[in-house]
Length: 210
Image 1 (spheres, helix red, strand yellow):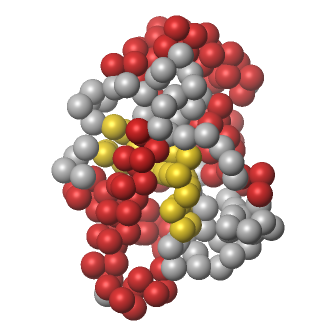
Image 2: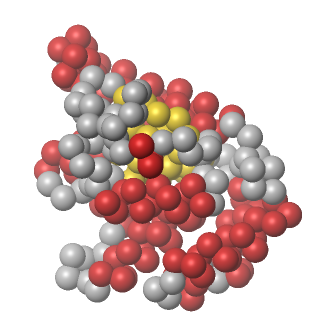
């Protein structure tokens, strides 16, 4: 990965045409409008075949997540996608700057100002971006709508990245190691100590650790 870029893991559903296309359009817009400063990795582009074992699909996604610098998690829907929530929680365990993106104008939360389950609120180094897609689509039209949303995502990424980390570079390698061991499923065999040391050093060089 290029150390001059911040690599974004795009967590979200990828189960139908609308989700696949929406993910790709927004990812391209974020990269282009940030002049490549933010490079987005989409699980739909590297995920193993649906016929693969579930644990292998899970591990492929989590390996890519941990290699990335930041996360955008799509929190659309009447119920949040459970896989996305798991990826969000692992990102938070590793103190990755995160944007929670909701383009669904429905409020399905159980607390004021929180459009989803309150257990997904209050996490450090996390920005919430909640827009009314229908209103913005009618205001901007389809192409300008995507670009306007991408600009808001970039602003939220900037803000999340500027928030100080609680994770010290001195303890980061051991913290990463223990977190990955807690995930189980053979992930620690994929993310070896040598690999983790490289990931931690890159994060240190980019100013993502305390």
